[in-house]
Amino acid sequence: MKRNTWQREAVREALDETEGFISAQALHSSLHASGSPIGLATVYRALGDLAATGEADSLQSPEGEALYRACTTTGHHHHLICRNCGLTVEIAADEVEVWAKRVAADHGFTGAAHVVDVFGLCANCTRLLTANAG
Image 1 (cartoon, one colour):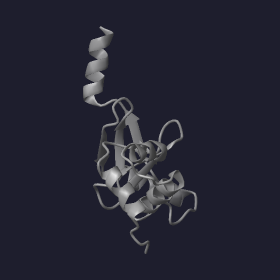
Image 2 (cartoon, helix red, strand yellow):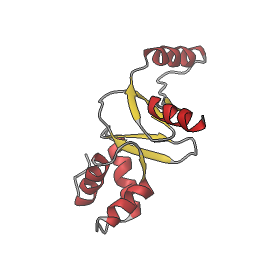
Image 3 (cartoon, rainbow, N blue to C red):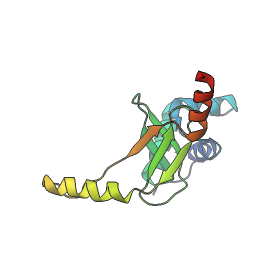
Image 4 (cartoon, rainbow, N blue to C red):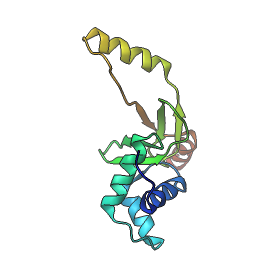
């Protein structure tokens, strides 16, 4: 088990205070803006540790950047993420679970794992964008 250093605790607290997903670089900038001397490599390491223990969600943005947020649900889950405002909704997706197991088994795979994150526009952003277009 990793010990709780002040750096890891600072990253955890900053992540808890952040709405939605954030990159390691943006979290590092936020920590520095608040006066923390923590290094970028330490932020990356702490975020990786938090994700590995289930204390943080991690996903890859459509641009390929790793993003993190404090995890509010225990156990396996998926996300709906607004591309515009970053609103994130944690969802169960039983159909995805069944499909993933079946596809893996059909190809002789065992112990398969998966990550499913759905990016789109939330209802509020859709409404705002529609109103501004007309």
